[in-house]
Length: 130
Length: 194
Image (cartoon, rainbow over all chains, first blue to last red; front, side):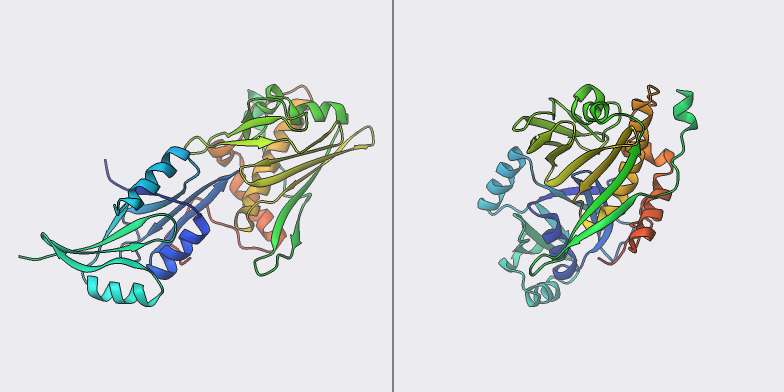
């Protein structure tokens, strides 16, 4: 048994694809449609066979309520790890992303938070070495 | 079920793309599929609108009849990885000539014309251009299954993953070639640049 995929609700799959590839720098892995359904996943170019992130269209009222509540409570709905959060912060900011928290020291890590423009807050995490 | 086991779709054909310019955006593409059936428009109309008939060939389940304008019907995509239900309102139902509704944000229009004692059936479906050859391949198989059903020889719905066992990938590549676009690869091979 393996953890192979994580799903994230987005309010617009085309817009999300642009943000997650062009701004964050991930790569498209699968893009498939059946009728109105679209299966869209990304991977990190650093790990082409690694865990995939599914960008799922949020057309479910219950999930929309959840997504909005998480956003209003400043809770991230996905977390990505980096080895250099300062460099990633500068790179992503330069591409137009809006950060709600710059890189900030917390217990055992440095975290930053940004808006994905599709209804979510995304957390970047760099673990501290002791 | 031997007829189903023996079924193989013929070569891609009878499809074209209509491109409509959209101000400040990509052209809107609509798949147009034409199929000649040896059955009357009345019979074809029933197969397009009656949930019991749709269940035998269509890529969705309908919880009500599509034959009346204004009817609100839930369409459930068959074979999608998670249940996909979209509510539609029938916007045109001129029996047995023209039927229009929307499936999950994409417009569908059917036209039926009497033709040599049978029906010339035309489908317009404004699928996202990225998936238009996939849609053509899927509808190709569905319309073959519809033809069997109308002929009194149903072979059972072939949609979703089932279509992969019936040359769907070949049709996808053939239609992409005919439309002059790159075939979206499925199953995926490796990570691609967006």
